[in-house]
Length: 233
Image 1 (cartoon, one colour):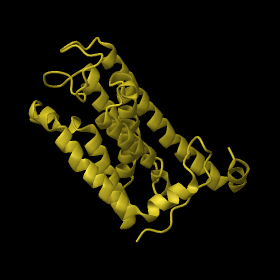
Image 2 (cartoon, one colour; image 1 turned 180 degrees about the vertical axis):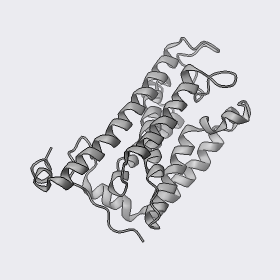
Image 3 (cartoon, one colour; image 1 turned 180 degrees about the horizontal axis):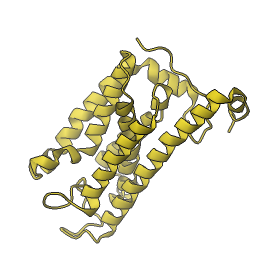
Image 4 (cartoon, one colour; image 1 turned 30 degrees about the horizontal axis):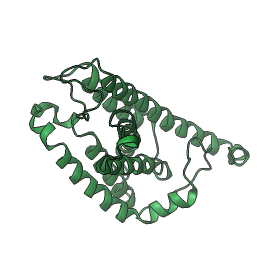
């Protein structure tokens, strides 16, 4: 059984969620795991047509969100059972933060959900916003070691490359976009640019946050007084 995770007194830009939200999420670990598994099943159903239209070799890079929620479930279970795997935690952190907030951007900018009011797109926006937020709890039990963050960064950078810049087999492998801002087969459209810039930017942001948490945590451990002084940041 895992021990109670530490808050490490990180500044708000590294740990923006209220501590009671973090603690409640971790107390409800098995509920959160179940929700993520349900989301994973739904996500693979959502990607069913794209998977059928994609070469088998590229399947691991196609279903972005369901793989991220599956990683979140595995990360929580491994922590809860005392079988921590730093690389899984790092993959879950980067994946959920990246694809959670990426879908929010896509729904607002590409699918125009704030104007259309489409209930399905709102469901995707809200559920993926929660997906992004849950990533911000992982630091409580994870050690973002440099090798583990490197694994996550390399994987999701590869994913960005084949999604938007250099497809391995056939066409680009990014998630299918909605009808707005898109012309079939034209990857010079605004939709492609927005999606690509958002994905790459969020990969960089997630990597920075993971490494910044690592650095600040080490600083706090070597200089406990600094943690107290900066707790209110």
